[in-house]
Amino acid sequence: MHGRMMLEPLLISSLLRHAERHAGETEIVSKRVEGDLHRSNWREVARRSRQAAQAFARLGCVPGDRVGTLAWNGHRHLEIYYGTSGSGLVCHTINPRLFPEQVAWIVNDAADRVLCFDTTFLPLVEKIAPMLTTVQYFVVMTSRAHMPAVSSLPGLLCFDDLLAPEDGGYAWPTFDENTASSLCYTSGTTGHPKGALYSHRSTVLHAYAAALPDAMACASRDVVLPVVPMFHVNAWGLPYAAALVGCKLVMPGPHLDGKSLYELFEAEQVTFSAGVPTVWLGLLNHVNAHGLKFSSFKRTVIGGSACPPAMMASLQQDYGVEVIHAWGMTELSPLGTLSKLTTRQQSLPPEQQQRLLEKQGRVIYGVDMAVIDDDGRSLPCDGRSAGNLVVRGHWVIGRYFGQDDSPLVSVDGEPGWFPTGDVATIDADGFMQITDRSKDVIKSGGEWISSIELENIAMAHPGVQEAAVIAAHHPKWDERPLLVVVKKPGAAVTRDELLAFYEGRIAKWQIPDDVVFVAELPHTATGKLHKLRLREQLRSDT
Ligand code: ADP
Image 1 (cartoon, helix red, strand yellow):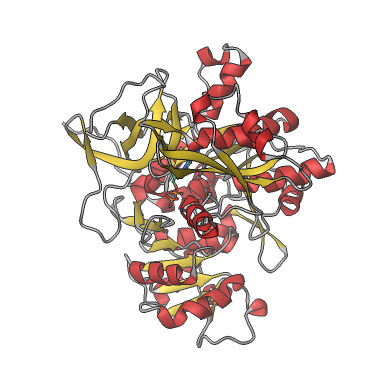
Image 2: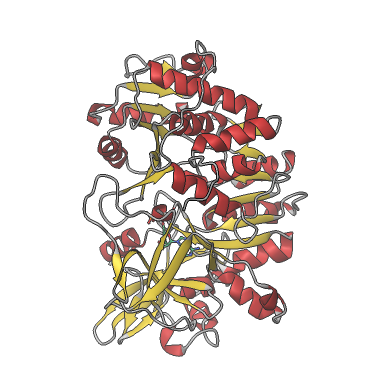
């Protein structure tokens, strides 16, 4: 017997319709590429999204077609998000920080029919255009007044002009909730990028879960500033969760330096933000250097790579900003776990609470996880047994875009789990802790050493700006940890001082063998330490 409830497919357009009808006046503020601060609201964004849907149809796009974007966080990008997915097209966000050849490869692999981009990316698009095999239209996301005067690309379209003749009198179509909605490629640090093709259903369920109190806890009274770019796993779902709760969104555009961010946080009274650790380094340096405080900023999600405990402590203790450490990945839309304490844990001594908060946290409903050994057997949840982390759930990929092979593995003989490539422990309370990516773990004399743990200790030293630990080949132990450090400006820290700093903080055999000082560390296009490149650099230097 079926239940007798209405069957409404979980469509992305329903999020926007909700925000338009019930939070229409709530603001969407964008610091634009053009330099101005643009003010809009959900009603206006909804109208322009419908116009965008009409305009893409006028260009000949049909459901399933991919529309690529190379753009910062801003209202036009949001309008393309909703205008494409809402009308059955696929919004394909592309990371402009990748190498141009990689961007071209991704556009071709996705077979994008339209490519929309901010004026800042015109040189990139001009460079890759001769390599593109599927793009028919190039759309500059700006107004007529800011269109480039000259370009090697013929027939450039202007986004605002494209919308102008449309009346916005468009009814969002109803279709199967499993229809593809957006496409995002992994950054490909270990080979060709792979596409994660999300569906309307997975996106709406992820938005629900993201907004839960034990997750990002988004509420209508929040002012949300996603520092995480909209080209990085849909800004961790915030553009959708914000519509779901109908809150104010503040979009920073390309202005991601500490000073610009601080000024925007204050001017718009931002309460909540999210981003990778590197962006908080810039913001913290700025507020530290100028003795500033935040007047409205209350909490932030930090993820994408391990949040150094020293950064967490500074944000919490010096600035009163709650840090929610989160783990996820492109293949997970991206949210998997967040560090929120249970009632019992809140009565533990403060140091124990802190140690728990530094872990990557508990899963939210919708995702399940386990740690397994190399033979696919599950390991105990004892907080000590480290194994390969596998996940499954409503917003976890089952296959990569365009690939027939299943990446899934079995756990204790049960098929259907996605191997994350991370190594982790899970404790009895369900708190997961990433100890490494499987390719970064240091295997010393048959034992595993966590590079993240060693990096976190180094980052707690007052003279250290950034630290990376990689495996150095060793004739006896196979691999030994090597610490690579960027000093804080003006700091005079030495090798011996840093190695001594590890004593008493970690088992003696895990202390790095040596320290190398460098001017800067290589990062991936998503702001993570690029350990593969670092290993290559150090090899070619020696
Ligand atoms: P890519 O896999 O292409 O680098 P993702 O952004 O999908 O791009 O990266 C996901 C990976 O980032 C995870 O598998 C994990 O290794 C790492 N990661 C994400 N969040 C955290 C975190 N809080 N702590 C440690 N590692 C993290």
